[in-house]
Length: 201
Ligand SMILES: Nc1nc2c(ncn2[C@@H]2O[C@H](COP(=O)(O)OP(=O)(O)O)[C@@H](O)[C@H]2O)c(=O)[nH]1
Ligand SMILES: [Mg+2]
Image (cartoon, rainbow, N blue to C red):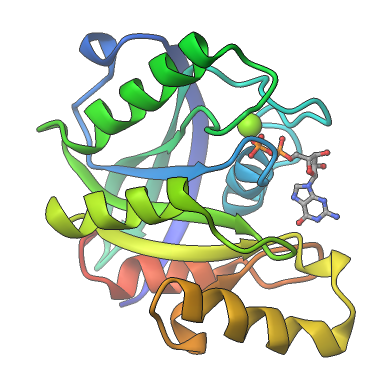
């Protein structure tokens, strides 16, 4: 489908599910703390610092909403990109970690207009229980799930294919099912996959 991103803007950060906007369809970025979620929001929106990135893991604890206006079939439409809090941040107390995971699970299983999840996986790490739990939830709740390997520029050329194969296998997927993100990687491949999935029209 032909589409064009017209405008992107930050709407707000929210702590409680009850406060989340529900006026437009949502696509959420999910992944371990420091996986590169906010960086990918900026790449997708072609902006330097729309979403705050950080070298210190565990900074984003809010649900950050970005409004994306796009043109498809000569019509202007909108959806929300949602930068979710990172999970599995070891420095948080167990109580805080549990509260954050609960918030994420409640969101994934809510009746909000959540069309799909981009699950970010650092390309140097294999997925663990948390990632598999999210994959299973998405399957059970019929949410479109796209795995994205991040920080590809940190890998040697020869290791990219290898990591793609190893990590996709962990998720029980084919190597080409997973997409890549990193400095110098064309972000349009991710946009294409989102629009191809047919949830946004
Ligand atoms: N080299 C490289 N660094 C990245 C990439 N994506 C994120 N980072 C860095 O990883 C750190 C965490 O990124 P951030 O987007 O804040 O992760 P988040 O916690 O998942 O939102 C920051 O220092 C980023 O600059 C990437 O594709 N390549
Ligand atoms: Mg972040």
